[in-house]
Length: 248
Image (cartoon, rainbow, N blue to C red; front, side, top):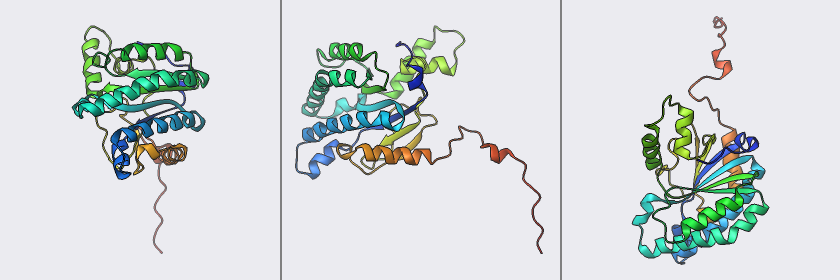
């Protein structure tokens, strides 16, 4: 299990994004689906740069679900090549910008060499204190919970907090504050189910390749305008009400 985040990042927002719509974006432009995924990588760069400036300390991006292995082999191969490219090309910029990279999900099913590339990128960026960037690859929230249950069987005095550490693989990780899904779909698709128990949800019709700084700001503005009660009541709701006024 990884060590905890710097305290400054722990106090900032945790935003999860389901990056959806790459293929449809490309098809509407009469391009290959691969071109849509390539444009999606550019959107990742924009959002990673914008997130710290908007009060985000942890950013979790859903890149490839465990169910995505069902896609055509050519598309899966292209996605894995893009992941390999991202790991090789972005590390220098991530280090320069203080971004700590972690990849969550299974690694045993990834093509040869990618797991090792992930390890090198994580080691190189481990000192980042500006943004905690987590990319979910071959990831299933339900599998993460099941695996945590199996590991928890040998522990005594289990609490929500230490079980959360087992689910996330990261000690003291803040629960998700906001989940954003692009492209108009309105479902969680097995993404961060435990961590998002009280997350606010924001759905946008914007396709992921078109998503940028202003879209992130719009989602966060809407988030800050919501009342989060976590099952309780706001203080003013607990105050005794005055006597009702009598009709004239």
